[in-house]
Length: 440
Image (cartoon, rainbow, N blue to C red):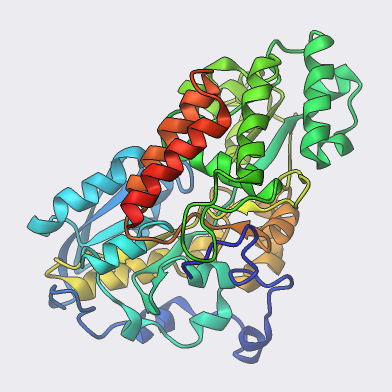
């Protein structure tokens, strides 16, 4: 899946199929699921171990499941598996990649959370184990196709999908009402900018828009959605950089113009997703892109000043469509783990449908039938209808071994354009030149 079409129809079918799931009589029971996934050493140089004892897992702190969620899941797992002790560690997303790489030689971790953009690098370098032989055949039909694709590279599986996510458009209903803006305007990016002008000119808020445009992967996620909306590609069919052409340049000019026009908060260039959530939840912004988790937190009176005033939509449409960025993540076995059987039990527990359904407010499940489960819909009634539309239409960042180096160059050059230090075309040309040399 190295080609990077703006909308990855390969990853999500327009109408996810449930045939195999229904034929099997619904989800596997948790006990049956764990029993089905026990054997094998996972490859990559690690050891199967006894299936008991201590394991250590590495997660991220922000977005998706909260640290509290993961600790609750872990406690429940240990109660069901009293012969296994799990030590969960947490780092920021920005530190996660390098922490995994640095810890790999010592075999520090047994389970690691990996982004959809890392299987190519981690699999080829044997940082995480090939678990293809552990994957039950039925998972491929029971999970959403995009989830199944998340831990794959070169035909092999390097983990189990756990976080299936994209960025949605959140808006403050009270702000729009005060400015006399119809929420239907937010269906297109042009409409979003017109709404932002009305919000600013009406004195509702100084800067209606807030983004996660810090020089980090968060910036590439926002750019990816706009790149797809304007018809651009990260790479062409030959695998060469293409983001410096047509739609890619238009997307960056759109971003820069929103800053110049005073519609986007200038602090966006120092902000990550949690900063966006805090600003939006404080009522200091009216419109924002963010992951699923923001809906629950922005409506929580203990963490937000605007509970009850938050709504969510799929990403707005541009001239070429409305793809959301594929922000999915997977739980992987560390190749150096000496207790892979116990680690696999933990992974299959956390990714199981009963556990994912229970925590659907923070991150939507990877299991197709969950989206028609009344309990899941009740847990996250605002996001589920948008997810059904958006998860069928995603753009994937390049699946290449040198992704991190390419991303870092692109982050740097996009920032220069956003700050007015370079014209958009020059910034993207410079990033494309650097990417081409890395890709060889």
